[in-house]
Length: 94
Image (cartoon, rainbow, N blue to C red; front, side):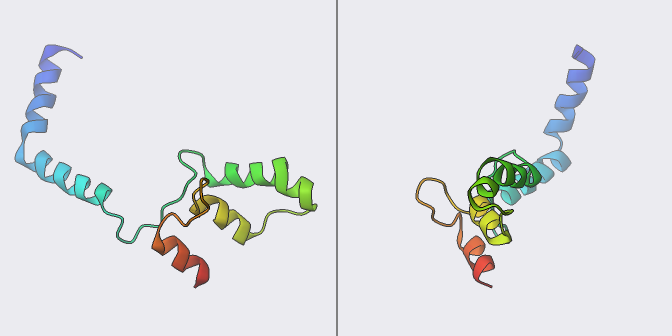
């Protein structure tokens, strides 16, 4: 990036409008209000389901994973199998 372009970008970053949007975005990211987190990281849900189907569940049981099994896999911690948050647990039992 050239000096002139960097100067424009820096001016944009220092503007009140940008700072306001940035602060709002930080607050949104820090908030779990209304969010149902999942444990798949950057792996798309369709790939997680495909792996569950191909790699272990279908081979062990002879059938595709159920929605419950998929939800358990994507909304509970691997380490202790606890729910990722209260909303995820409430949604399962709803």
